[in-house]
Structure formats: C-alpha cells, structure tokens
Image (cartoon, rainbow, N blue to C red):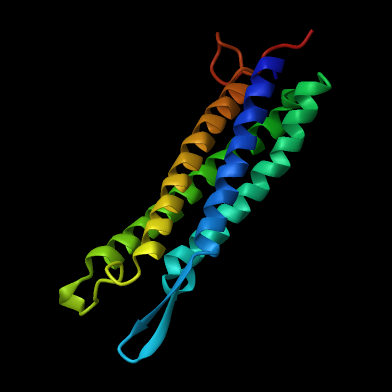
Length: 181
C-alpha cells in the first residue's frame, strides 16, 4: 500500500467513523413528547423498526471502520506494507463492500419508512406523524443525510480497497499475481 493512499484511506475512515457515530447518535437520542388526544405520546426511533435497524447497522459499520483505521494508521505512519498479502486484501475489499452496501440499504429503508411517516398512507389507514412531531422528523432527516454522506465516504474507501487489491495482479495476464523481487 502506498503511503499516500494509506493516509487518504485513514483520513476517509476517520471521517466515516465520525459521521456514522453522528448518525447513530442523532437517531438514537432523538425523541419528542406531545399531548395527543388526552394522553402524552413520545416518539422515538423505536417506533419505526427501520430506524432501530439503522442505529444497529451504522454502529457496527462505525466499529468496523474503527478497527480498519488501526490497520491503516499502522501502515501509513510506520511505513509497513500490510496490504501485500492477497488474502488480507481480498478480505478487506469484500468487507468494505459489505459495509457500504448494508449501510446504504439500512439508510434507504429508514428513508422509505420516514417518507411514510411524512405522507402517511390512507389506503392502510396510516396517519401522518411528522405534522405532530416536527422536531423529531427534522432530526431524523438530518441523521439520514449524515447516513448518506457516510455511505459516500465508505464508497470511496471501497474504491481505495479495490485499488489496493487489484494492484497486486499483473496488468498483462488475467488474474495472475505480480512477481515479487
């Protein structure tokens, strides 16, 4: 792994961890209590299962990127070549792909559930919730925007991971490793 690439990957992973943690905190700590039809009703992320899944997924993705950040920082600042092992490179590439796709899927599912909370669905007799819990909905919207920023950052990380993997192969013959020495 080239040292400039390692530092870029480490910076992107640090940014992704921070944005993923921001997403988890914005969703996880968001709540609003309103007086609705003679009772107090509290809206939390547990009311929409997609938001609950989003908190778990972005927390796991942040933990994974934090673990990978340790590998990147060791490679970048101690000038060690940790990416030359083909099996490690494939594992990092596949895990980076899984992290970005699962995070994007969870964020998109939460967005879809949030749109239902905004618009409601008369056919199913689901009422609009965001006209009652406006602060809650705005904060969830900000969290979803942060989640998509994290997905973009992780997609860039995945590109770097693909570069680190496929630079180990020969450009002249298909799926033949470069010779060492």
